[in-house]
Length: 285
Image (tube, rainbow, N blue to C red; front, side):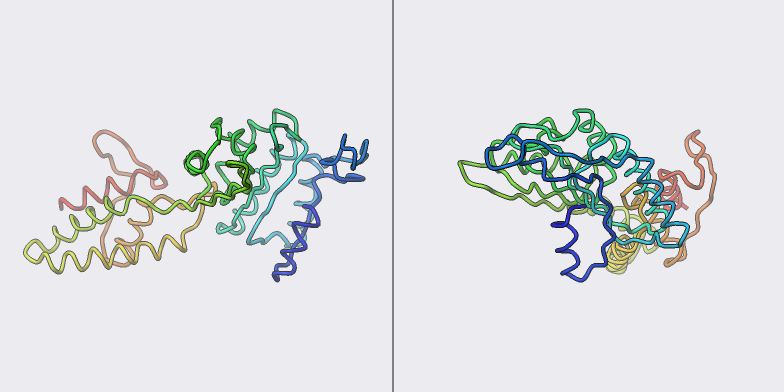
């Protein structure tokens, strides 16, 4: 983490533990520039060295974090270890927010080895809570050329689909001007959920639609309050079906069978698909 990353966070009141992924004599962005430097010297931290630091923190019970921010990473081994770090930190604090600045390059040029691009695409982006690429990096991560604001929004949607709920493309050049596009993916599917809740409560109160509708709305509101406090798995909230099951079982008195066979399929307790099937089955009882 560079000084211009952790110092602003400290000014905002955050207690920051910086780990330098590289230790260079000077900024590499200014190489081969008349006003810059002809060369640089230094070291790139590898994955094993990073993990040793994590083990040291864990041994001293210092591994509880609310946020993780990553920036420039110079090696594949380090980037792969970052994924292990995310999993380790989320095992301790499931609500950990991982903000990833995927520093790949700018203005059509890569700053990092090409193989890092695929690691970001396939492994890092899916576990990130927030992603902050520039225009070139967003194009690398999506395979989508950005030439307008609409293109930028489409790139955000592609990245949302891959994992992060928040995407900020930090700099996009459009018609000679520099723009920023931020996108926060809102939760979808409330229509289906509302319909399911109406079905369930109508089944319990077949002659009182007003009461069924009132309880459906109340259930929907409470359901979202549960989601705000939900644990995370691989950077994502637990499935809606599991939280719906929790709402119906713990707060509304519904009962569910575990390890049952539905339509010839055997569901285990930890199967994410299980609860919705069980809920539908319960509606018919």
